[in-house]
Structures are given as structure tokens and as C-alpha cells.
Length: 207
Image 1 (tube, rainbow, N blue to C red):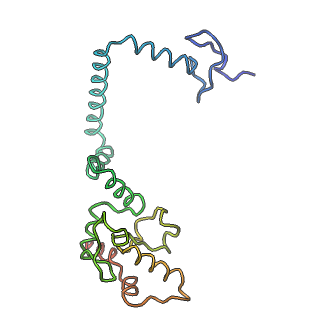
Image 2 (image 1 turned 90 degrees about the horizontal axis):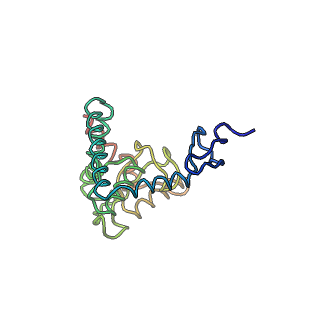
Image 3 (image 1 turned 30 degrees about the vertical axis):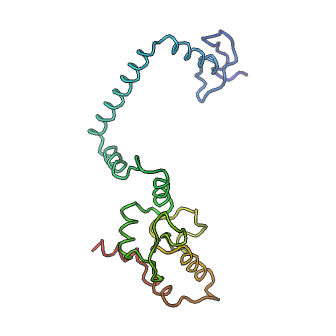
């Protein structure tokens, strides 16, 4: 038994065999639809195409403006996107900031506030290097793996971020935590784990 809608004839070539669609409402072969679209496109002059694009963009902008005025949820979402937009930033900087948000739920202002809270120093006592300098000295985000376990590429909840560390210091803290029977936190590691900087900063902001 032929599926409903698949026994239709193509409006372009008058032949059967229409490709199935989600609701089986296709009226043309895919190739015939592309040919018809290209043929209609070729009939328009360049000036007509420009005018159509201008009119389409103006209509979309008007629709967005009307929705912005009438829909509070849409307005709030647009405002957040505009506030944290990365357009115009260098590609490498955009990538770093996207990773900060997607992996650790840290916005750019929060990252730089945490960097200032730590006085631009790792808890080991040595200063951080420039963000585009030696990778071992740049600040790395550290989080509690007991909350969000997994590799460094796993997305976290954002509530378990503890602070910024040098790359080797970050690996050292991870080794100590992963081997509690062999290693015991001492010195700055013990102080860092007992009083992580990021929760302290959030607590002070809450007050």
C-alpha cells in the first residue's frame, strides 16, 4: 500500500515518485523544486533581488522590534545576548570566553573579578602570566571533581568552581585529590581546598 501523499504527481514534471517528507505533503521532487526556485530567481534582475532583500530584512527587523516591545521573556533574552555579545572580538578571544561559559558557567566579568580577587596570583604564591603567554603560567579554572567528575572537557554545573590555578598547580591539586591514601594536602594546597577563592568572592557579593 502506497503511503498517503506519495502517489501524487510532481507539479513541475508531472511524474510520480515524490520523496517522502515529514507529513507527506511534498508537491515537487526535491530536484524539481530547486530547478523551479533557480528559474524564478534568474527571472529577477539584480536590482529586484536587492530590493527584495532590503524589504525582507526590514520586515524581519520590524517583527523583532514589535516582539521586543510586547514579549518580556524575549526582551530579557535579547538584552542578555546583547550584554554578553562577543561580536567584534578576535577569534581566539571569542573561543576562550565561549569555553569559560560553556564549560564552567563563568562570564567574562566573573572571570576577571575572580582574577582581581586573587590579586592576579595563583594560591601557590606566584603571579599569573599574560593570557596569551606561557600556557603553564596562565590562569586555569579549577573545579571540585566530586561535584562534576570527568575529564577537563566535561561541562560543569558552575557551582563547583573553586578558583584559578597555574596549569601545573591544577594538575597537582587533582593528583592529591585523586590519591587521598597516598598524598595529603599540605601548605597552600590545604589552605586552598579548605578556603577556595571563588565561593569566598560569591559570599562577599551576597553580603
